[in-house]
Image 1: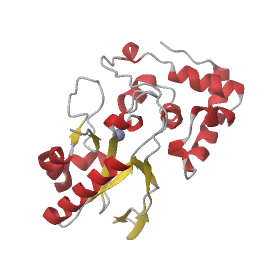
Image 2: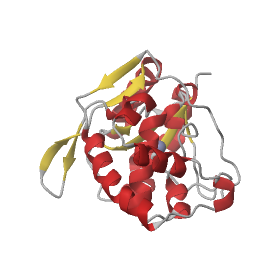
Image 3: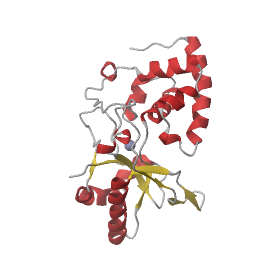
Image 4: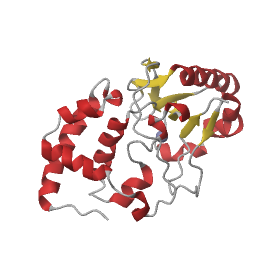
Length: 229
Ligand SMILES: [Zn+2]
């Protein structure tokens, strides 16, 4: 189990602000550990390493798969022009640029087209490829927002090197209706989700974390992984 001192929590509060800013960066999802560390003080680096050194087993996660800290794939394409309609603000909102290996993006475009043909509406990618260092960034941000609660954080986010978002041979995408959704946790009640359950497999995509999965990860109806068959 990890313990954090008052000094570490003080450093963490500053680090949190720094990482929030970094997250806004256009290419944040592609950051390397070298670039991330260059941006941090020695104490901040130590703290982020400590957070990433948690042992998931100590927090009730029985099956954490380690894919490795792999290099950033060279064949990524930028997905820049996605929008959704926000019913709340009654306006069109742009999704932050996402990245995916070309093969996965091509498969996704096929899904998008087929779904539109069947339902008259479709889905966007809200999270595609994430480098292991970027995973460390969002892990720390979530951890801080969860008031240093490791268990709560690992329930919805995994460690660098363990995420399907950073493993291009099993590339994950998070999706959302292009018509917008108030709370993504309700995605399983949408027609888009029902359609994916029925047809995604045909395009190479599978649901990674169904209800009560063996990994000890929350039900994630939005998270689908691509595998070339
Ligand atoms: Zn995901």
